[in-house]
Image (cartoon, rainbow, N blue to C red; front, side, top):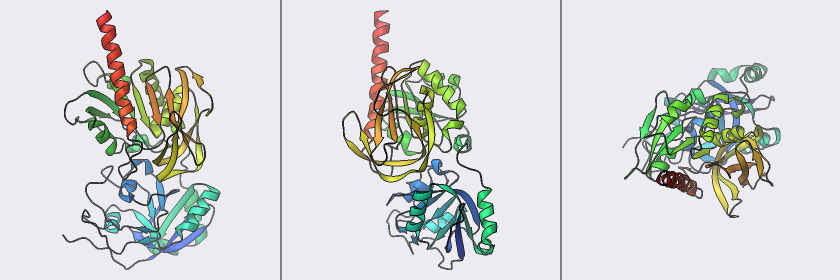
Length: 393
C-alpha cells in the first residue's frame, strides 16, 4: 500500500485569538484561513474520531498531546462522513504514520477536506491561555493570509459569530431518515433524533438488539410515533453542536415524549435538552470539557468512571437535593470530579435519564458502556408493564 505522504514544504502561519494574542507557526493541512471557537482536547488518542465528530462544528480544536498523526487515518474510525472541525492545531505533526490500519496520512486528508491547520506552535502555552481566559474566537491564517497586519487579522476574528446563541443542529443533522438494523434478533425499536449523532452510538445500540431509526433534528412527534409497530420502544437524543438555549423545537418534542412516558435516553446535547425540558437552565462553561480522560462519579454507586467528553455548555441543576419538576422528581446522577459540573440526570417518576459525556466513546475509554444496557432495561421494564396492563384488561 502506498500512502499519500505529506509535503514538508510548510508555509508561514499564525493563530490569532480575539483578545489579540497571536502564535506564529507553520501551515498544517490546507493553506488559507478559517475562524471558529478555540477549544482544546486532552485526548492522547482518537484524533480521527475528534475530527469527524459533528459536535465540533464551527470549532478550532487544539490538541494538547504534542505529537499528532502517528497512526494516520483509516476508513474504520470516522464518526461521520467528513471532518467537521473549523480548524486544527497541533504542536508536532508526525512525519509519517505507523499503523497497519492506516490508509492515508492525516495531513493529506486534512488537505483533501480543506481543513486549515497550524503546527509548530506552543500548544501548552495556548491551552493555559484558554484555561485562564476561557474559550474564545480564533483565526488560523497561513500562506499569504498570514502576511496581513495583525490588527486586520484580529478584526477578522472578532467579526466571527459567537458560539453562545448558535443554533447548529440543523447544519449537521441527516437530510433523510435512515435505519440501522439490530444485530441478531430485534428486541426493541428506537427513534434516535440526530442532533449531530456519532456513528458509534447506533452501533452500541444495535449490538444490544435495538433497531435504530435515525430521524432529522426537525422531526415531529408524529414522525417519532410512526417508528416501529405502534410507536417506538424508546427515544434517543444525540450529541450535537451549538447552544442548547436555542433548541426550543427540540425541547418541545422532548416534552411530548415525556408526556407519553416513552423511555428516553440522551447523550451530551441530549442531556442539556432533557435539562431544559424538565425546567432547568443551561449555561456556557468557561472552557468546556473535551478529551477522553475526564473523571465522573456515578453518585448512585460511588464509582468513578474515566469518560470521554465534548461539551462547552452544561445543565444548571441542584447537586445535593432531588428537584421537583413538572415531570416529577429528578436527581443529578453523575458529576464531574474536576469542577462539580452536572454530568447526568435521572427522572425518578418517569422512564428518562441522560448523561453529559459520551458512553459510546469509540476511541475509549469504555467505562460507561453500561448506560446502553440501562436503556435496554428501561425499555424492557416498560414493555413488561404494558403487557401486564393488557393482560389485566
